Length: 223
Length: 223
DNA sequence: TGTACATCAGTGAACGCGCGTTCACTGATGTAC
DNA sequence: TGTACATCAGTGAACGCGCGTTCACTGATGTAC
Image 1 (tube, rainbow over the protein chains, first blue to last red):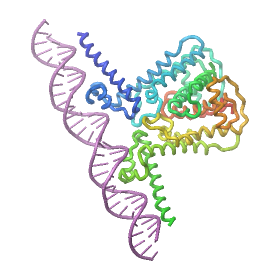
Image 2: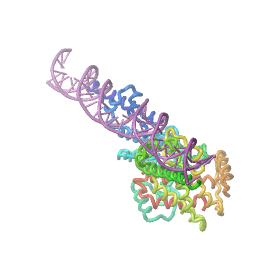
Image 3: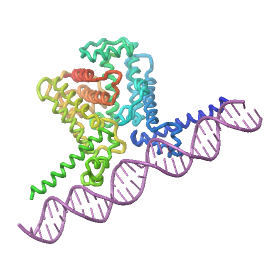
Image 4: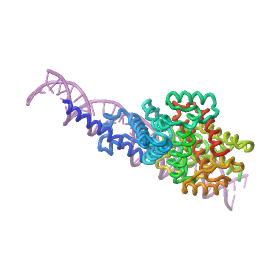
């Protein structure tokens, strides 16, 4: 009976989700290092050993949370992109959407863009989700007539840029590719500085400054 | 007897230093959250309660490590600055010096520029040391004829920039000040992305890319 | 210079706590015939 | 449709561990007269 088997499987999927949700909630309070299986189980009214039916270890739960967070911020970036219209407007929308998600989920953001967790090695599963925001930005530039930018590049950087050009399929010279990576760095640098408190005393609140950065970096990459 | 009293005080100062050094060493292995007073004491051949003669609590030890780290990276930036010559060269030297320190002390860097530690509130003591790198960059621009840059700024950002102009005593318009903050963000954004592994798959190793960023941001702020 | 006293560093035991993970188990859900 | 068996979810006790902090104490170092 497929229907009955599905019932058990559905229950399993639901509880797996509930465990992750509760873990995310606790993440917000105590951070990644403080996340405790026992506390999660307690909150769900289960005994701690029951969690091992769903996750083989604490690390595997953490890994799933990390992958989920990358996907969530990536999806936020993609959904913010109107997909048509002025490339510059699309670019700005993606910047805003990314920042909005980060501000709404500061601890999940810290989980993926903050300090690495010592003793924890990011598995291969995180590579593709981690690239989604960057790819959303690249996508805007792919179907666009870019202002050509020249510049001298060190041979090492030129090689890296040219290799990226192939992978990304972006129609741009190496200088532009390098600037694109700078823009990507600027995006997350600004979000991190804002969320981690470094702008206190200079541009806090950082909304206007962030919007300004988004514009300047659009120009900077030739949009 | 001043000499004798000094002996005891010197012993105290030395042990305080040894405790901090050992704590720094362990920080590199287990991260801030994993730093344990008992482990530090064990390693120094003391009993854990003895540490309380030197630090009233674990948090106070952490605070000192944070302040020390800000001062160390600030000093690295200041020492890298030749103090004379072409402003652009000084700018590049400061960028390199800052990154070099960060790469040599990745965990101390993560302590100050990584995720905030949940439940830990940075005390006022960190504000001044935290500004040293930024101030080193500002200093280069203070005694320099800058290329004037115009641009539209949102009123909120304009007000923040003008207020900063006064505090920093920098001879530059608000657009330039905003760009300076972007450069500062770019500097630490790039270091963090490098150290935290986000450049793997694109510009790893990041040496050439970082040097390139330093140059482009120098131009960007008008140097 | 010598003695009585005060300060301070370091000890060792204890308090009370939480953690990840394993394991043998019970009872419910699902499967095969 | 009914029965025998297999799978799976969740239990509860236990293992072995480390943590921050307190407290009464001993003995050495420094101070005042």
